[in-house]
Length: 142
Image (cartoon, rainbow, N blue to C red):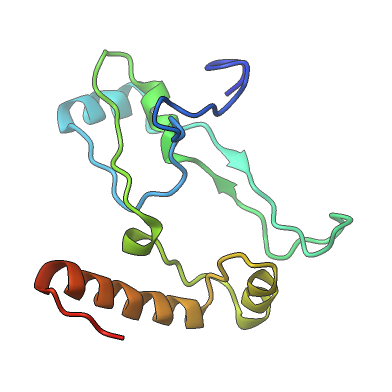
């Protein structure tokens, strides 16, 4: 990113947000351009390895490491000018993954970080429901 986009890396835009949002669940493509890009690139998107280590010394993997690619790489492959953008929602509205086991979730929670465990996922679901009911129907649930 520093070599190809900005020497300071992922700097915030005028509203304070990243030009490269990190989490998304939905991508929307204009099909003619997408098909042309798939044909040109043969569907190859730059990949990287993102190891998860089990220890601070980084001597042991927590899980098998795999190749990954980021959705942010796709716009870099476009050859024609076009609009590339994103929509941001508050975290409570759209992001509550359940991806950590109970032990890892507890460690994250003690650090004051989101645990992304099952208990938080259930809590977030009920919080979402309560907030939406209040916003849409004026119902307030304690």
